Length: 308
Image (cartoon, rainbow, N blue to C red):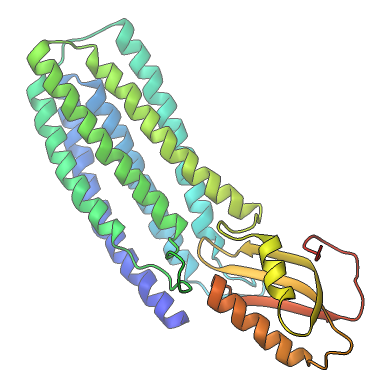
């Protein structure tokens, strides 16, 4: 499994390199086109494209860092590097959105003439390249998931993917603005589209920030319930009670679980047999492969997750 994970990681790295090169071409085109046309919407989209390159580069670096093996100072390795990269990517999106709104407000107060033809041409080129980049990143390998559960997505890769999707939608907005300006001369549409682009960027930022912060504060992984996990473990033959039950993400894909178990005194089940059943159930139903189980004779009164 580690070899498969490493191979998947290397494949995603290759896709990131290709995406960075293509996105850099969009950035150069939109900066030149935005200056020539005077379009704030196009320059706003260029700012978003720059954030895409930053996000892709940071995600690529985090992927490489996550391949480092555990050592004396990092017993889990560098898995959380990908989550931190996603957090930084989300934060950068917030800064860019606010900057776009400030510039849009200034442009709204002092409108300028927009050259719609170069604005339209550059936006169409950007849209086409964004579609290609989104296809490249959207096709990354999923982790193996338990039967009946949707495959998990690497938060780091997903944060970069959201950057690109947001830019793709922004390109559509710029095209719409260029067409409206071309046929109506309504230059105020340019800052309006910029404001909408800022909203799209902020929504993407919120999704990434919420997920990455939840992982960093070691919240219960999405889709899991401590009470449900408790019931599943308590339902295993030989288990009397479960307490001090915790589940958290090592990174955006791998889940760890720890629990204290008290066995039924007259059942006769051995610790080894109960442990095997618990681990098999957690792996098959929830995709939890990293478990730490402690067997006790009495409730220690610690932590959350005791049977009701």
